[in-house]
Image 1 (spheres, rainbow over the protein chains, first blue to last red):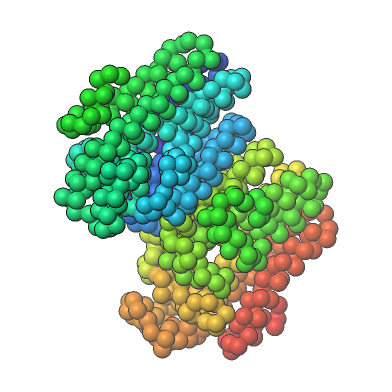
Image 2 (image 1 turned 45 degrees about the vertical axis):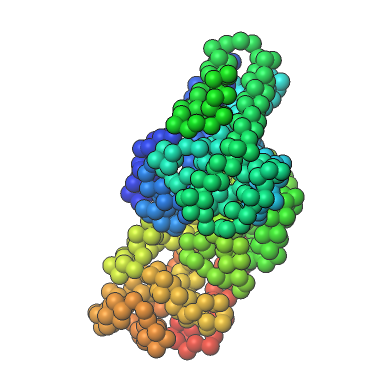
Amino acid sequence: MKEVLRADNPGIDSIIDYLTDSSGKMIRPRMVFLTASMSAHDPLVVRDAAVAVELIHLASLVHDDIIDHAMMRRGRESINRIWGNHASVLTGDYLFASAFNLINMHGMQDIMENVTTTIRIMCIGEIKQMSLVGDLNVTEDEYLEKTYGKTACLFASSCKVGALAGSMPSESVNALEQFGLCLGYAYQILDDLLDFLSESSLLGKPVGNDLLEGNITLPVIYALKSKDYGTWLRSLLENRKLNTHQMAEVIQILIDSKAVEYSLHLARQFMTKGISCLDVLPVSSAIKELRLMASYMLETYYQKLSHYDCPSSQEAARL
Amino acid sequence: MKEVLRADNPGIDSIIDYLTDSSGKMIRPRMVFLTASMSAHDPLVVRDAAVAVELIHLASLVHDDIIDHAMMRRGRESINRIWGNHASVLTGDYLFASAFNLINMHGMQDIMENVTTTIRIMCIGEIKQMSLVGDLNVTEDEYLEKTYGKTACLFASSCKVGALAGSMPSESVNALEQFGLCLGYAYQILDDLLDFLSESSLLGKPVGNDLLEGNITLPVIYALKSKDYGTWLRSLLENRKLNTHQMAEVIQILIDSKAVEYSLHLARQFMTKGISCLDVLPVSSAIKELRLMASYMLETYYQKLSHYDCPSSQEAARL
């Protein structure tokens, strides 16, 4: 990745070094490699497709941090914090252009079509999300639409890109794309749950940060509809600046109203549906790895809330 | 352009409508059309290449306005001002992705290679420029390097893209690219001059705005080296917040030190060199149009400073 991004210009190179020194979970490039490995493929094409997908993800994170005024990313100061908005906008653009340049080198027209369309969807989704900030009447459908643009479509794209790089038949491409899509939904739902249930030290941001930023996520949407807890929660949330005590109260409502349980249930449903999409493909070690990736995602989730005594962690034992 | 950008989402569509309602001078797409028209070409390919180049230009403007905290663009409020940083980052990304998506539809791999490389150069150049803000020791070479990334490389790319869309032989492609490059340098030098010499009402921003923002342009670089005026100018500029009276003093120095004259001379040199690049191509109406474009650029410049009685406007009569 560093090699692709090298510009021989100290300005951008130092930002890129900082950015690539702390790698994330690399879920998306891993998906590209795994899906491509199911059929004969050119390893250089697949490597570059995987790098491109991670670059697109990185670009969107760098630009998100401008939007959210985020000071931290992956446990370190954000690009934004160190180099300012100016450099962050340009770094994101540079990453996008580098990703497209890399894909284009191999003339992968179908992959280019997929990733450029995906970025368009991501942007439209994020702009839509802006209009929903702080809106306590947001529906579950709107939440899922937002989640599609924010996370699920790039997960789907990562799997599709790998499958296309492996020149798989369209039925297999579609199945893998669907798997990625479902995993993306599950991943985001779990991530939104962790925002309430994880410890602040693990999150690297305050507990309930999404809510503090006006991002109304699934558990809150569910609890707001609850006959027993809805009115109470709404009155708490109409007070825009929740203190730690009030946030603890909100979280207890999310647990007691079964909103946590419902969200976890929906995440598991997406995961199960995603895994079932793989059934049309011949069994292989890559398929096993994809299944493992899904269960690892749930496991990490449970680990992160192991300190928490809520019904969902007891339910976990049954998985 | 509107058709390409339509997202059927009210959030982004209203921003796009606003953005495309006020078209700029369309220099870049015009270059694509003109250069492509010199040989047999697919009109749809050329149209989409021209749209893509303008989208890339628009994306860079939208992102620049975030960087510069610009409140106005093309005589109207900036996207940034109306919809905020958040929407501006995403709108720029959306425009970039739409441009690549459009180029890719025709499988124009050489064009894609050119535009993605151009955007990388633009980003690197802008990041470099950041390190030069307010630096009174910036050299003419550094100014030209900055101008390459800021303007000249996209002008060059516009001409090259048209030539590639017209499948011209490589000698012609190179000649047209060089023409675009030279015109880009000339255009930016004139634009930087106008920042001092035009009227505030024509500029839509205060006279000397570049300097106020710490952007040290060619006339200032030249005047700072002057034996007679350098020390005086430096002492004025070290006072970071120039008032209107001091700015008028700076401008008088730029005229008296012959910095304006020198800059205009360099712009004309670039223009002459650019036009001479066209000599290898057979005479055609498109070639004539490209020459006209160059002279129109100078003419507009003179018109804009017609209120000004400085040596350069007298020199204009000799052109």
